[in-house]
Image (cartoon, rainbow, N blue to C red; front, top):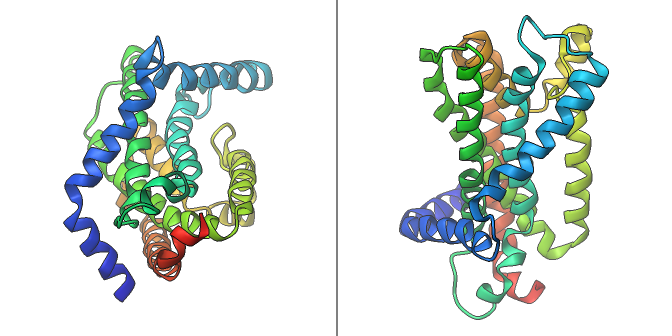
Length: 267
């Protein structure tokens, strides 16, 4: 708990710096490209098109899921996954990528993973708006359930920060962690019901699958846009998610503080 309190104080003292760094890291890569900010949506949209063609048309032959077009059902899972996947990948290398800073000056290193996650959130926000427009254009009216969107974004962000505190510290000591994380993410993508439905899973299979806390976020987006359900309707899953998130953040704070003073030597 002491480690977490230290990190929280460091975040509070550097709140403005986190915001400025996230904005800088968001804008800088776009300056050297002709299409600029369009790349934020072009790359994900191309992936969405491929997944829809292969899984929606090729495998499912255009069949809807629970009465909803496959594309719209898929979007509610794929858009948050883009944020989750990109955040874990970038978060793992967050401190290592800032080696030039931490070796030359005293820097509050605990804010680096947070800054990285917020940068990925800025990348993902345009996709969320595109997703909302996709539902509206297909006859889905905006509902009061949309107020849950910030809740699920905050929930995902906190867990991602906790994970990044762990992986960004470990990768400084063992570079192979980055490759391991990439491999795990590829497995998670196909083991998470983003492109497929859990309707045919036996009860035990569903319980095992739902051990993955990010399914809470995926299901949450679908409940918000498609099924009109509140997050508190599934009390057990909500409690489980926040327990995992709190434990992950506590472990992340502990591991970060353990390696913190050695970061400059481990570069």
